[in-house]
Length: 310
Image (cartoon, rainbow, N blue to C red; front, top):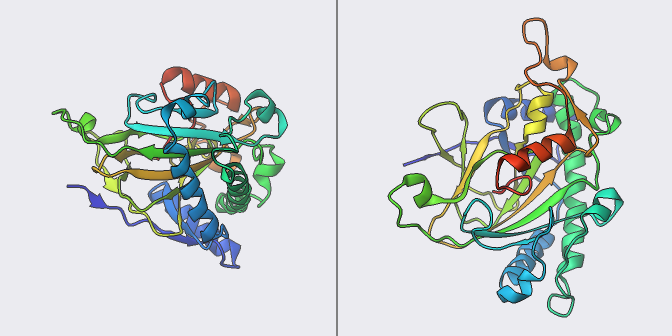
């Protein structure tokens, strides 16, 4: 029986940035995860996003297959990703180089007339939250608030949104992992992930991925809050100070929906250890890497086609 992990709750509306950044630092040092409240994304918009997500996944399979993923964006059917019992839909900004190289596959307006404007509004709203949050993360690392923007790391056209539907089916396998996982254990690739859920349980984190056997703890949802976690590239920037925590989703016998927004660096951004996170006694643990190269390497190592899922 897993225990419930008591995560910190970060209120984004608090005016004192330095005190908020210290709370974020403590949360990332302890767990790599926290809840984000009063973030400014309207509750009405979040409700509509889940409604439109359900409308999309409720379409007949032949309507969804015409949007099947080629590269990074589009629809992925059940079992397409590591054999997990989930289906997903990935989209990003239609603008900039990424939008040109990886065009979005939108559902027909005849079928879902409100789908695209709802999702585009949500994308902009959450990216704005992510930009503000990343400034607080910079302060938590004793850097200037706009550090990641000046570095060229933050690109509001590089974020990716994943809509996820977990079937909730339970396997008859005797293997405990195969029996329960709706999304296999993984870490996210980029900077930060902001996750919204429908309240159905299933998300678990493993704070020490090197400990055997792994110890998994439940992360229940909080209505209206985001669950925020660090990605691999932020762990590399911070020399492992902030951890990209392994997590998974259990099948609980009930259908589950979630929406993950991945804040990824600009593809050309070179990620290397921050000066404030290394010393003679703690040299850089990871070599410098270009974001696009790191993503390509991670994609080639796994069947996960983009940042992750939760």
